[in-house]
Length: 370
Image (tube, rainbow, N blue to C red; front, side, top):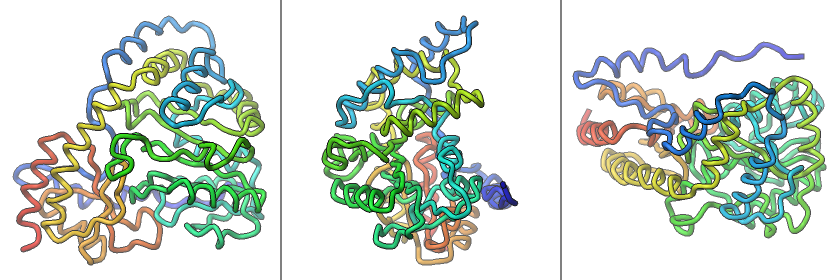
């Protein structure tokens, strides 16, 4: 049974946002990772051309979409041979993250493991199912009642990347426990440090991780970041065909179906790697301005090898830092929104227009003296 839920954490940012907006030159919002660049024209055209969608779409996705997902996994994630029954489109990735424990039948005697620095929806998914939420990055710590493990690489908020050996160790431990393990990998195309500068980060379905056996293993992906499709709610899951079949059945019963025009737009997005490279370069340019500005202002950047964020601390309580930033018209996200282990960290997003990033860098030049 669904019990009481916590308040939505971002509501606590309202007074800081109000102060930042009062800055003479306006607010620079680096708090939320919502894309701000245009959706590529080819994708929008595909959506528009598919709007005569008079029939119900299929839950499993069109054959063309499933083929595009499988081909993309082989081309960009190094995962070959995904069959149609091993992929499934979802209505964005957040709903899948939130509902997966429930759809797997977890309950109060079960544990859901997730990273210590974590997107809050992992814990919310456990709460919806009535399961226990366990933040842990060490497979040896995972309790015997673990039934679902979430990995997040590249991570939100910290941008850390798990290597092939780390992924393999996690999969081995999950299998020892009889748990499903899911890799949330939606920032995989946004690597900044070697060896991910010009290549995606490792995938949990890579044969070097799972061998030839995908049982109990899932990869979750979203096109929101790499293709600026957050408003389309375009995502998918791949892996263990038995789990995919169960999820498909649940989704058929409750009508969780990706709209037909979005399915067509996804095909175009998945078949075009050029627009992804172009978007990555936009984020790289913003990062190259913001990161040194933060460091010059006295911040230490931790992890942040990939993804859309800089995970930083100036050695103060996060809320004190948030207040100091707001006085300079800058809004960031406190580390306390991402678990109980990082009370001195804040998250800075790269999803601000170029002029906003430039303004933030200028304001940070006066930050350390106030």
